[in-house]
Length: 291
Image 1: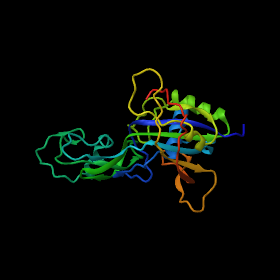
Image 2: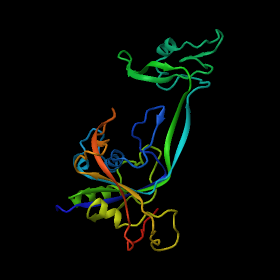
Image 3: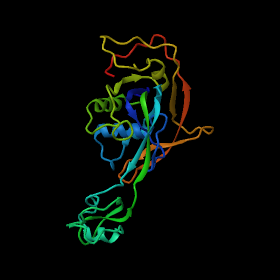
């Protein structure tokens, strides 16, 4: 029971995005999966509510091996702008408030509908600080943006990571593994719209995170259509990042230890990890998985 066990998780898909410091106008991605993102993935698979305590999920040690680091991809966005026949959805139920906050010049002979002018040129009222009107109970916006918003989103394209969760209780890891293959909620590789491909849970194994990374072959690349497991890849020494169970005085901490997930952003604390070059054992078998 006290021996460490590791659940291996395959994180691969066309796009991944593991943000650390993203804001609305710039959504970043870390160069590898974050512990908060992977624990959130497992919590969603188990069906935990956002406000529900993480329990033993918060106690696992986390590690990740970069089998294919992927290519950074920048997605340029413009949000809003142009001609709109009506107000944004959050405002059309309160046309009086919308009229008061609109300063666009509208011809006197413009046709009006039940929610004010039928059309406004080059107008976008991006709802900000949306609250509930105490009188009517409808959603209203305390501030409107007048122009299109420019944002950028960063992703990792064609990446594949072997993540690991270490814990002395193998039954906990088996429950997580089952949930990953039979999830109660939709799963994402970090940000929404980044679904995983193929198998996620790759079994529970005795040993530490470093042991698991050294004794398991690199994840396969392109999908294979021949029967049987692919030949193991040799001669490649990927990087791995392995969490330390105690603070390391010479290592800068990361702020991605989840304490609570919530609609208001959640709470995180510090954790420490070390980086390793992994030499994969020459007799490590190839994977027989759906990729």
